Image (cartoon, rainbow, N blue to C red; front, side):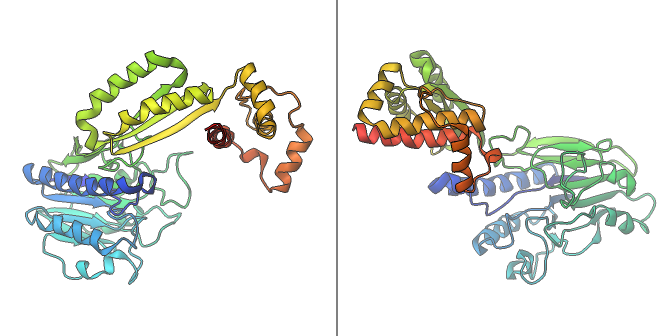
Length: 405
């Protein structure tokens, strides 16, 4: 038995943080789906598994369903085995699986709405789909029951969806799957979906391929599907990672204090990426404790160089740093703003442990007064992070720049 194992396509994801460019990311997922099916055809795979979360949720637009079904229809020679996951569980009439396009499926497409087994070329696929969004029950337990009356020499492949029950890495109500679930159920392989990065356990028998199309800058091990070959009952599966992703998610940094040297390094990296600009999801972190003028100059230099990258996020982690002369000038010209900045610095010291040094702390707010203000605003001091104070400084900085202009 040879098959391609995929999961977590999240079709219809909004990517709202990218604004008008979100459509590029949604279209990329369709491109990647077609590429993965092409790989299945070229390798003469006997099945193509989608182990949950084909869709981002059960309320996706009909156009998303239609686009997926059109792609599936272009590959009638690739048997498709689709399992509802926790994002798109089969919850009954209101689920995506009850829509018209799934009512009369072509012969090469199977949607597992209930636990069941399916024979394909002498091997058996055993499916345990999700029918709710959360549960403390291991969904792979059902697979052992499904396998009880199968021929002893038949290859057995389970399909389900849930978190791997790794202490400290999963939630109790997130369909926890035992790491030895394949062996426990007597399976040759267990194809699992849910987490978005590659995972393999149970002597190559439990496989979680991650999302075929990355959806986060923090993912370092996604963008693949698994090509699995099982020669006979009891054989250890041969597992190959096939890269299929369309978009590459990259993070670059620029310290505004590095001046021309830092800009030159960044310019060279951006130039190297420019040929792949259309398929790059770029995040640029701007950091450093800088004066308003330096920040303004850095942004003016940076923005035209980011224009070739349609899907780009600029994350400003800079903090305001004023010289003694600038600080005294601010006190003289905008005393209220100067006082607020000093108070922010002092509160960052009290509650986040990261003073930014934006302003001297003389006459800054006292701890009891700061605590009283937070209590009046119903803000839990333990919930405050350095990012909160950085954002407040950035907003004040923007106001300062507008006043100055």
